[in-house]
Length: 317
Image 1 (cartoon, rainbow, N blue to C red):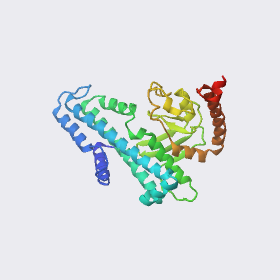
Image 2: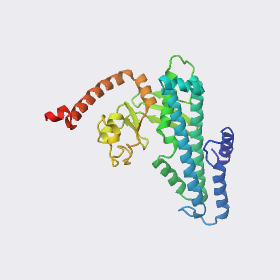
Image 3: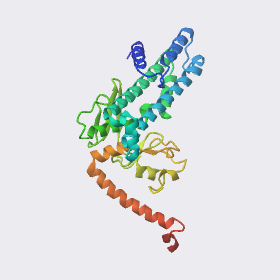
Image 4: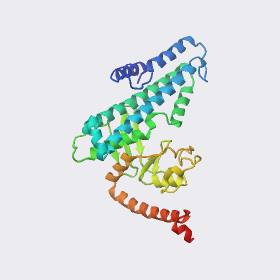
């Protein structure tokens, strides 16, 4: 999409959003680059000191704000969907999303659009930066954003939002469910189990739900701070902790098995919607894994009781 065409599209999109929503200062940053292009006579491959002090800090701050807002809104939707008992009653009284699943889908659609437009705007600005300065600093900055997991497109909460949509769609009492986004597919029975959707004509999301440790569909899936998803048991094994204690005993030096980033287990969390989706879509597989996991956890508990001071088993040793 051409820069001018996208600028018009993004302007129209911003007009539909409440002013309180965090968004990119697209026109401000674009004007900054345009002004720099007029003033600069000498192009430098290492960037531009004249606008770098403003451009990258502003972009970094705003992309992070968008990601935080997106994550918080998805968490709120999941709380409503997963609520039970009196909490569910309270949500039904206070929120229309709890009373109407279509309202939940509409909120999900809005959030997906929010992520896709922000991602496209960020990429357009960074491409413009490189073009203006004949440099690769914009590409490097984009790589850095991905490395530090700032972009909402990489967020495990986007996976949870997609799983929430498929869970609503699987409900037999709801035959007609509008698409979260075009081309949304859930194929967990294939050789490569995948969730996918088309966020934009140039932006496609594909989530491989295979655990890279056991090479099976993730069971009791957890997302680490770096965004990578594993089975709970496999992640505990990688962190050298028991499933009894979980990640609270993981060392800060423990690294992600995939990207080798340290300190990723302290903020790990369970992907409840994805777990529900897998349990509903792969019943036979989950029953087998459940039996296997129970046996292994019982062994771990027995072993732990022998190692714990004060227990009867410990005193007998």
